[in-house]
Length: 336
Image (cartoon, rainbow, N blue to C red; front, side, top):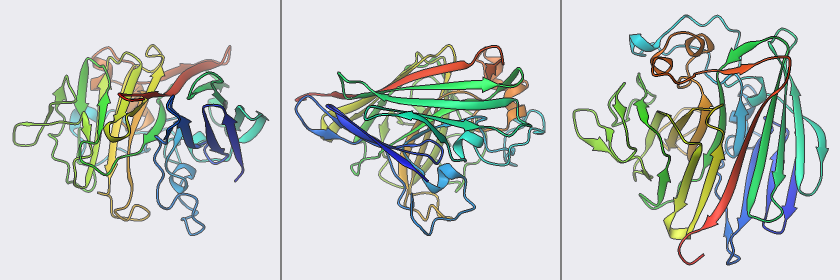
């Protein structure tokens, strides 16, 4: 594994070759205070980490890219209307080659790094390049992902920034404009979610609860272990995460024409098996063209998300790369 360090007047960042993960960033607010928005797993980078884990799992945290996005199998408890076709797509690792392998350096400086990963010759995807660039005038990072194809295809795709959870319950507030939300249509391990299965909603402040009532997912953490996974459709391409006790927020912006959904994954000490061990704390806001984390054939075929008019795959063509640009920017709240 190799690493690169970015340094500019408004912050610093670390990028590693494994999964091209933006491992960490420290952003300087106008008052001079430092703000660290990204999560990091306790086992990330540890020498004893299981070598059989996918690359992004060995280094879990930060921000990375998934193509094809998904876990490769249909959970047995999944509601029948979501199962789609039995997946025939060869997906040996979770979230695709780019989230598992080692990326090669194309170029770097104190304010940018460009990395590239080549896919096996059997894949429709030829390569993916990723540029992470510091904004010289702001505490922000501009990121660009270019997907190069061998053959025309459509695959589920997602960005995967994972943000830090504060200790205080409801210490972080999440704002993601959207039109229609879906709870996970099956049982999430470890089966402790209070949310209703396969339910719809139109605000994060009132997500249907099992047995009636609602749960407010616009404010985290709950204050007790949780594992949640939601899909939000009809997004505007903007999400903000505000840390009340730090007078700071992080703003994520992207192109909703390419990535018309947003996945919200909350993982707060609920998973007990290795490597989790009841220790991981973080939540991901994942701009996506996907259907939850279901297999490729589910995303390509008829599914309830596609039935609403929302695309669940990213189209790529060898004639020109498909380019996804997005931005992570820190802002002061209140006293700055």
